[in-house]
Length: 245
Image (tube, rainbow, N blue to C red; front, side, top):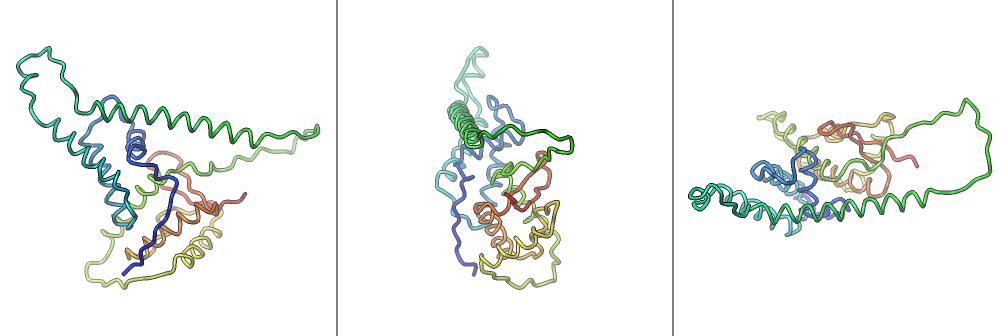
């Protein structure tokens, strides 16, 4: 049995944050949310969290129930609307939309303040310096550009791929590795990849226990600022890099 392992990740900011991530990811109009689609995607994330044996906060499950209730309400025929074409009834999504818009305002404001704080910390003065032509500006990958929800989506793809690729007649032995040992192995693997390593290459075994421990190891390494993850475009593969100052 896989030992219970809890990890605190700052990226898990609550169900509204997950919904906003899905709205941005699928370029959905926040004022006209397709509840059926967003519910399906939301439940896939919840399922992945359960597969990873993460402690899911009750608020995520409450939101899941809310989405299903809204979906059911939108499927029910409205007799008043049928009787009067000019009737403007209340949309079951209105309260959720209002909460999301309010949350997005606070999130954007917090992001702006965080960026200003970062700029202030990086500001410093130095004596005048002569510029030489051989000096080049080297662009570095943007660290921390990927959210924990992007990683959960990538992890779901790993689960699905391992499930379909696993030979039906082969018995896979359970692999149990201490989290610290797996962190060292992942870090060593990334060290040798100068251009970074695709996220799914960190999961060589179709063993749930090994995949869960590997995912936890990656989260811990990111939290300790030893590695970072990037994604060039939405839905592209995630690339893991060594954090080098």
